[in-house]
Image 1 (tube, one colour):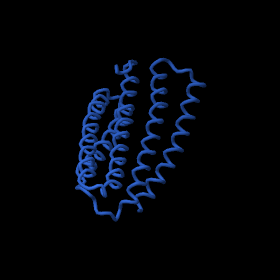
Image 2 (spheres, helix red, strand yellow):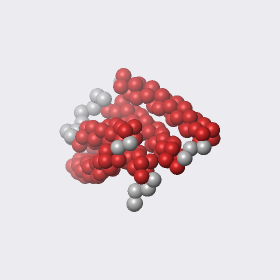
Image 3 (cartoon, one colour):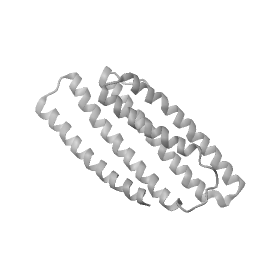
Image 4 (cartoon, one colour):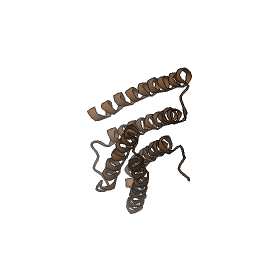
Amino acid sequence: MELVGKVNELEIEIDEMEKTIESHCLKLLLQQQPVASDLRIISTALKMITDMERIGDNAEDIAEIARFMVNQKFIKDLVHIPQMAEATISMVTRSVDAFVNKDRKLAEEVCAYDDIVDNLFQVVKKELIEKIQENTENGEQAIDLLMIAKYFERIGDHAENIAEWVIFSITGEHKPK
């Protein structure tokens, strides 16, 4: 329960940081008239803060669901959801590191890693569908666990977005879809 409160506090802090960074970026744009490479960095920062804010929202959503599950006996061993959590934490950290260090290779690794998180989500979804088919009383918890897994999958997508913006800030080119 203490962790849920901490997540809520951090989400408020992230929202405030988003506003501050956005304000600084806009001041730079208006007052400095940046050249192309600097403009890419500023626009990347603006895009990144949106994804970071959404990551905070997703983390808050996970914490909210987890708060209600604390004392429940789980319908299955939680193997893949913790793996998703570890992977997405790593992706977020590494995407920010790639921005700070202007490391294209690291950003590309983050983009590639998103496939692992997407595959883990599919595994979790399949397992939870099986649990519901075994016993419909598992349905509510299965849906809660699926929502948590989906939020982690979205966090991975946002980390990939950040990494793609890092690549843009370095190369000036958007990743082909």
